[in-house]
Every structure is written in structure tokens, then in C-alpha cells.
Image 1: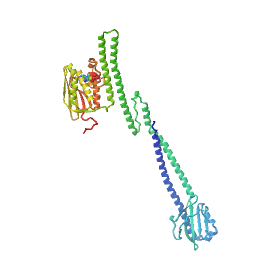
Image 2: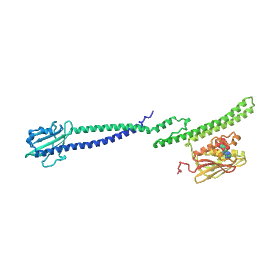
Image 3: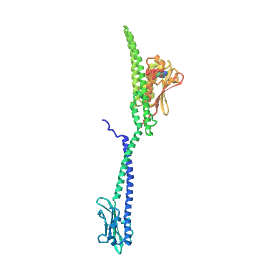
Image 4: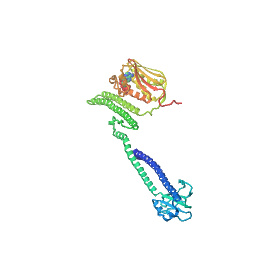
Length: 472
Ligand SMILES: Nc1ncnc2c1ncn2[C@@H]1O[C@H](COP(=O)(O)OP(=O)(O)OP(=O)(O)O)[C@@H](O)[C@H]1O
Ligand SMILES: [Mg+2]
């Protein structure tokens, strides 16, 4: 089943940015709106209070109720719009002046006594049926010895219209902020993430034949640089592994071709004319020998290929090194005697290792020593113990090798010139297997020449295998 496609990072980040921008603009807009609303309402409150104050003084000193009653239009003209209400009445009597074009219902209000100053606290709020708010107040005044009540109110129609306009602008700004951030964010993010797309197309173009191409990380942002470097390092490792594999298979083809070719040659020559039974037997025997060598080579190659992959297959046991050396020396005694070579073992110790692999590594070294040592010489097999490690050495007397040759001995398929000529038995894989076995054991295989004409191979085991704790 295909995994569900996740929304793109660009889209998610863009949306998140846009929502943040929108919330910020909306917050600022709301704050400004509330401030403006407060200011507008305070201004209208002060206008109402100023009007009341003005008429209270006018009635007290200049105008009389009778003058007013005779010319009510005077008042109506003094008020500028439909939004203002003004009422003058003697308590308990019908109003002398009544300006209320919208017939708006007034809230109940306290009456401010004639000698008291007016303040915003004396005002009350009301509301028209249409939902428009109104602010109103009532004061007492004395005119020509009579007590009159003055009521003034303001309906905030214009203010509300202004505020509604302002609110629409804020909504527009919020929508604009969302869209602009979304657009800009999308463009910028896409640009920022370009190296990722470049990496994807680079990776898509990689084939075994093109493992040497690398990403150019120069203009990559810091965050992606690490990824780019890791990616290039991975390609380095892959290219290296692939190169070794190619080399290995080329070597392998080359190594197999020679013995197979020589087998075919022998058979062709033999078939050219009738042969005696002895001749056929000799041919079959030599072919069998050659086939055994090929079979050993295939087995060794398989072993090396598996050792490259698997560390897990090790089955470690505690081994007594004196016993192991004895066992291998015993096994090779016959071969050594053929060349008049003496085998000596020396030292002891216990290590944790895979017994089959340890025997194989040691056998390869001893087999080499017997094969390449001078006739009639002596081979020493010994254990040298130090704080950190065990070193199993196999030392023999033989040709003096230069440093370059010493460095190549552990390479796969490397054979010294002498061994090429002397023996068709040699594959050049024995020491490569020794090195692979030591690597599996977190140790190493080494070679040195303690004196001219003496060569010493060593298996170095760490005392405590890496990554394993002492068993209690
Ligand atoms: N003890 C030794 N003394 C001198 N030369 C050695 C010794 N051991 C190895 N060599 C040289 O190192 C080469 C590689 O050894 P290695 O064991 O890997 O391959 P081989 O012995 O040639 O073949 P194989 O072990 O696969 O049958 C040998 O061909 C030989 O020239
Ligand atoms: Mg060998």
C-alpha cells in the first residue's frame, strides 16, 4: 500500500506564517478600533454635556420660558441634525420644547441639581430599536423663578457609520496581510528549499556508472549543508565500496580464467591423438588437482564476501591458546617434516574468539610459513601477552622482502613472484582471509621483519572484545 502523501512543507509553513500575520494584524486592528471607539464616544458625550451646560446658563440669565414657548423653531434651528434630542419641560407638565425627530425612547436618568456641575458619570446609555446606541443626561435649571428640567441626548448614528467603515478597513487589511504573507512566504520558501530539490534530482540521476558525481554545497543554507555533506560522504563510501567490488570481480574473473584456460588446453592436447590409460590417468589427476584449487579459491572468495557483510555470525568461546597452537602444529607436522622444518610453540593465554575462525587464521599462517620458509629451518609459533592484547606470532626464516611488498601481502590475490612460479597451489587469498577474520574479531593482522631473512606474522586480539562487557 502506498503511504499517504503528506502536505508539502512549503504549504504548511506558508499557511502557518500567514495565520500568524493575520492574527497580528487583526490584534493591532482590534486595539486601534477599540481606542478609536472610546475617543469618538467621549467626544460625543462632551458635546451633550456642553450643550446642557450652555442652555442651563442661557435659561438662567437671558432666556425665559415664555420667549421660548413663543418661538420654538429657534431651538430646532440651533440643533444641527436628526441625531440630537433636546427637551425642556417644567416638572410634571408637558414639554415646552421637544426636539426628538426619531421619537427615540429615552433611558431613565438621574436629575442633576441646578447648583451641581455636570459630569460624564451623570450620563446614561440607551439604544434605538435599530441597535444604534444613544447617550443622554438631564439637568435642573432655574429660569425666571421656575424650576425646569433640560434633557439632551445624542444618537451615535454617524459615529457608528464611521466605526463600521473603519472596521471594514481592518478586515480588508487582515485579508490582505494573509494573502501577501502567503504569496511572499510561498515564493521565499520555495527559493530557500531549492537545494533540497537539487539534491533529489541529483540523487535520482546517480547510477553505478556515475558514482563520482557530487553535490555542490556552496550556496546551500547552513541547515541543509549538513545534509548535503552527509549525502556526499555517503556517495564517497558507496563509490569506494563499488570500486572495490568491481576490482574484486575483475580480479576474480582474471584468476579463474587462467586455471580454466589451462585445464581446457590440457584436455585439447590430450584429445588430439589416442593416449594410453596411464596418460589419461595422469591427465585426470592433474586436472583434479587444478579443479581442487579452483574449488578452494571459490570457497575462499565466498568466505571473504560473507565476512565483508556479517559480523553477527561470530560464535565466540573462551579458548586456551596453548591448546590451539598445539592442535595446529600437530596438524601441520607431516608437511613440515617433508621440508625438514621444525615447529616450536611457546606461551599461553585465554581469549574469546570463534574457534573455527581462529584455527583457520592460524592454519593459513602456518601453511604459508611451511611453504615459504627455507628448507631445514625452524618455525616459531608463540603467544605474547600484554595489558591490552594478545599477539599470536608465526615466525619463519625466508626471503627478505622490501616494505612495499610487505604492505601488499594482505591484499586479495596478491602472490609473491616466487610463489607464482613455484606452486600452482597458490591463490593469494590466505592472508586476505586472515585479515578479514581479525577484523571480525576487532583485532588486526600484522607483518614485520625482526631481522633480515626473518619474517613474522602476528594476530593481534584485543583483551576485551570491543562492545562487550566482562561477564560476571
Ligand atoms: N611466511 C611467509 N614467508 C614469506 N613469504 C610469504 C609468507 N607468507 C606469505 N608470503 C607471501 O605472501 C603472498 C600471499 O600469501 P597468501 O597466503 O595470501 O597467498 P598464497 O599463500 O600465495 O595462496 P593461498 O594462501 O591462497 O593458497 C604469498 O604468495 C607469498 O609470496
Ligand atoms: Mg597462503
